[in-house]
Image (cartoon, rainbow, N blue to C red; front, side, top):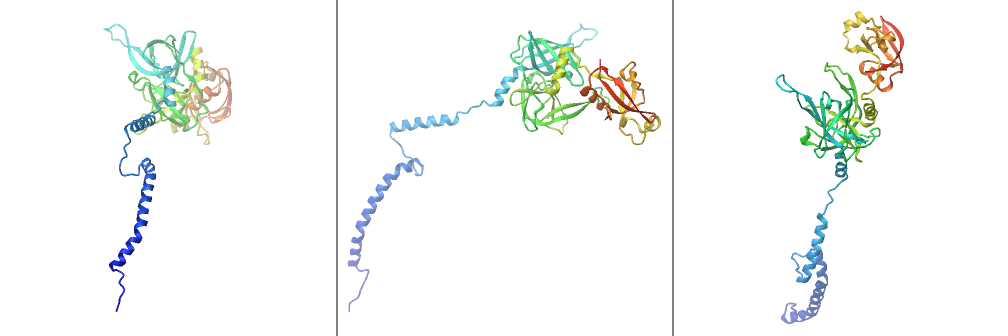
Length: 403
């Protein structure tokens, strides 16, 4: 009885012979494929080991790598901001306020009372003109301008103005190398870049630069000149978050084109407040600068009254003295009148309450000054509506010149 065994030795030998040739062919083809694919694998860094080239090839590869690396790390550090600052900085100067300080046993002398900043805005006929803040040079017996290279030049005060907080200085132009380019503040937009240049905390930080944005335009900031706790004026300013510190006063606020757009003036100095600084818009400053340069003062319309807003008058006096109708809640109470002034000549009297100027309502002394200084000139006429003893009246005032 026979049987069939697939695992017999004779059968295995026959099968092994059948697979020898295909295996040899596969090995040969695999070797050829590896040789062909090796260069590509080397370039793509997919191999788990390094391939070392011959010495001459290695040198050429290292040269190429060196060139590639030098190109990757070679950066241009010059930017538009750095170029602008380098261009503008020589026109921004330090302003030193020297005042007489002497004791009865000493000879009179002067010592430095304060430091601020200024901007050279004009150069003409051997003279250079600097605009700064009036509070920077207030009370000075003599003034020095400190150039960007630390050269000190004596300067003369041409004129200053309390309300605008502007002052103009004149000096020799021998050391002047740059005059600021005047821009415009009218078209400023909230969010656009702004750069402040000046001397925060004095000359040891001269030429300091801070960068921010325009945070607001046409801001109205109340100012108290006589420290009586009542606002005397409202300054219209540009708000910026570029850092403005003591000593920056009078310095330059510029745009990204390097043009002067404002004169740095003040900041909100409270421990809980950061990044609120102000500058006088250049469009508002230029006409006043020209007047200071030509006349030594700003000529403003003058009416000749001392007055207070009704909200500042005690309610008892409102009822017993002024006798106003119930519907009159805003107005300007005249406390006193300068003799022979425009108001006196027009028939106005103390205790009169002004409610309208040329038909426009007026509530306090700031409203009066803004209307006179912004919309009127000396010699213009002003229609005044007022109440006297509870009755409404009107008169026309021919405005004079404020001395």
